[in-house]
Image (cartoon, rainbow, N blue to C red):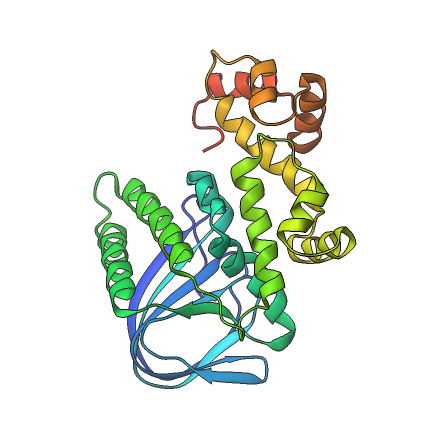
Length: 287
């Protein structure tokens, strides 16, 4: 198992394999593999399934998995820190496919010992390989600016596969995909007044059902999720020293600067003003 560097949590590899990879975990990272050709069985728990060209396999911590009976099995694999990737491009959260792949499917499929992923068509796979090759070259040559190249293309790749994602009945039930759509809705409409009744209606569930399922997937209620989205969006606006705290509170959907400051301090252990001051004194402190 490759251990990611905390200062730049990213690793990329192309490899052709034969035989078996024993059961293992990726404790500090996400592993995303693209199957290019060859044979293999992907095993999670007691279940295994054949994986073929075009499949994207996503393993989230701390899922144990293995690959067995590999024969001329070529895969492109990326390991990365999902949270830091989202900080680079928080618009990825706008795609229901992203929520399905990285939150909904892993939660739903955990008990079934199945792994999140789907199959790309030839055009989609070839486009993904192009982005992969750019990152692979940058990572290995480490030329000037290589980290920026990798961050940019990783963000683009995550957005692309999220758009390509098309759930099947075997992956997640339609009601769970509706949960993904509500999370996407929150991300795109955080500045508006949003209530649980509205979100439950999008998911075609009762408010009670919606709250329960959402919390089981995201580990928090929809209201807490909405507050966190607004807080993280506000951090971007705080980078602009000409925007007032009251203005940022309003455009992020709080509509009450005292409540905004209270929630910000509770979540980040500092006020928005202190956050901005730290950023001015050290521009790279939150990067």
